[in-house]
Length: 246
Image (cartoon, rainbow, N blue to C red; front, side):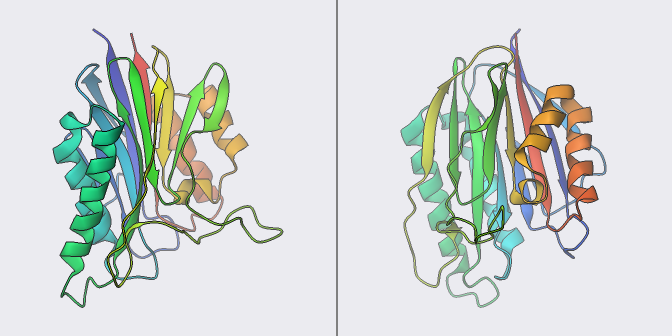
């Protein structure tokens, strides 16, 4: 039977006191916590399977509340995400839910989160994001980013920037979002990496590509995590590898 294997890991890194990242894989969510070891889940191919990360906005309150709210919404909506419009509608709903939860609560005021993920269908994948969390495709043709960053160009001499131009929530007044959603053909052996910037900021793309070119599953997850930690672990690091098998 064709299946999708998802290996996930979430860690606060070495600098942050709290983990404000969250993750969803099908009905399973991981919110603001720590996985001591990579966790692997296997799902039959067919019913829409959503795998996504959400990165609560640093410097603003309750990032872990916003990110967990979004992944739990996506977990509930996951089986209905059968096309691009369904994904866009789900992300609009998540955006409204973050604003609604913050309304009138000073402890949650302006909380927000990014989100990025992939919905695996029987013969295609829906890639989506709002913010600067990322989705990469690792295939025989190579390794490349397939999400679209909502961030300005980094300053001269720097590889990354922490600024974002679009998030779910995150403002004092309601603002709509325009999610990036694309459909990609899906074949046995295709692999995706869904991750927060706690992985991509300290680890260059070529380093991540090298790990995924050499390893798979839990070993790949461990090596990715180790790379982020050895680079200083400056932020929460959360990611999932997604592999489609015949």
